[in-house]
Image 1: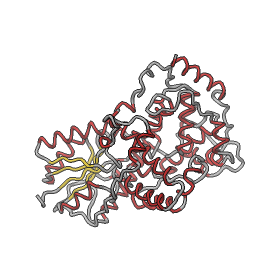
Image 2: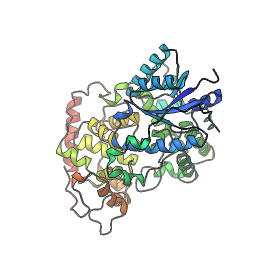
Image 3: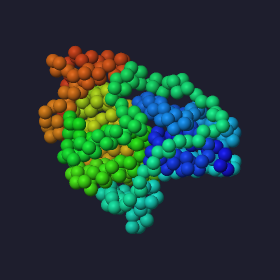
Image 4: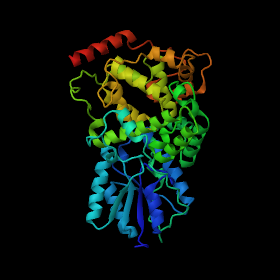
Length: 470
């Protein structure tokens, strides 16, 4: 079997280090054929995730070439494509790293069953999470539905050291044919926005590891105190790289633990945020409906509004609430959004505008380069009040009050909103270069009046929530 090729099916795991499946494949001594399939799941990604995936694939292909390998690209439904590759290469096995969202799990379950029935070894590996969802249980044997007990259950566990990157991968005697990445045009949906977002993206494993080192060497000390201030450079930015597996969670955990043991004041809170991501994935594994239905019982009759002119103004960053609009514009320019700003933007849509959280979830899915199915779903349901460990229904974030508290010098709002500034920064101007031309927006226009007064929006939301609870 040592000469029988092994197909390593690459998905959202674009790295060499901290990659158990890759490390074990290299250790077998067999020829390894890394393959990425633009399949039925990936075809459903939004515009920004698809663009960012393309950038990540290009970087990962270069990394594989550095260890004597290459990345084979194929397009089509996963099972027929993998079957064809097995037939072409004589491969005896297909290995991959697990994913936990419903679409990926349905695909992977079908692929594994079919390949095994045909005599091909089909094997899935851990690697995307610190702990597999079935490894963390309550005392009663169920899954955790509240974050704090989940954190307490895992904070003392050792997830192990990250696997070292292989120095080389044995190539097959002949490489199968590959599509050309540029022919896939993964960035087509971004249109003119791709050039703007590209200035802010941090692509590839090498840059992800450097980003972690820079954060741990400087900002982690003040992380807990400063992370909620979006105008400051206080966070790690690693959500983008974690989303595409350009860095593994064990690498981050071990780095954070070293900082904690060295006395960095913000290190534990940084680790808690990593575990919040873990919590979201565990919930999605046990509650696949998280991204499509109200998680809490009794919420299906809540009077959410559907699409509307107000929701469109939210999408365009033109609500007249500067903190909300700054958040939306940051997303169009950078492909990401500060976490505090995400909460404010989501609360405004679901509470002040009484709009269904699924509308916001879908928009973020289309616009975020750090889009993660579980984190996105849990975040929206948490803010809306319908999800696990949800914010209380009466918590309605006031964008103006939040701005006073977390952006007192207007650094964040001025960075992203050009209107009214005599000399707006390039970041604010770039919004008008990145947003769809069809919106007809320009920096010289007058900033809009609010869609609804904050007091009126809050009162309307509280009345709806109270009526729903009665």
